[in-house]
Length: 119
Length: 108
Image (cartoon, rainbow over all chains, first blue to last red; front, side, top):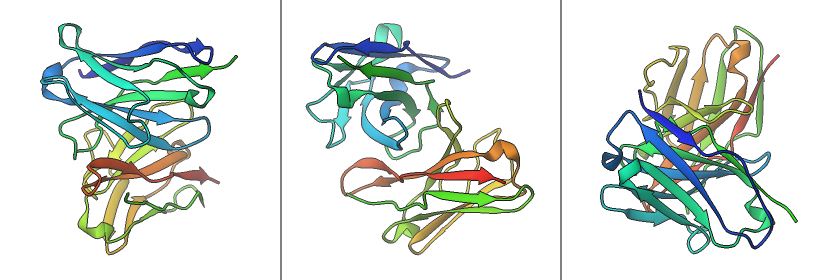
């Protein structure tokens, strides 16, 4: 059974760093893309970026390039989304999702990680 | 960047048919995917490639795509179908996926 399990809710102050994770199981981690999707409170879905763990090929959406870093650790089948300095506007729920290929729909999703940034 | 337009909300009576529209420039030439999101839950893929259903999704969910409008069709609507529905396509010009703003379906 394919599973994507995300790390728990996080609370940070503006300017702090943060890394959230997406641990996968039930399939070969290096053969599929993992994307990240942001959902701000009461708003819709926004694609942030994607990584192919097989060769670490990483792409970012134009609004997120330079704002976040996507990475993956093949040894533990886990993808990461990280910030060096969070802002209040980063408050949102973040989802990871698996794709067979970048043009293919997101077929499996993590449960989401709520990030709250407040002073 | 490619823009997808969805109506903000739609109300439908139980047992009726809901049609959720997704507009885009010549969207009929693209493959459209639909996600259902219930409150507090992650999105769920309900239709892919215009009209195909993933395993486990009821046959009541179907889709069509032609011209400038794609449509998610929910037949014999049930109370459990309430939620937000998002369309999504691959924008080849910007090389990334694009989501519509979502439609909230309310069952009366």
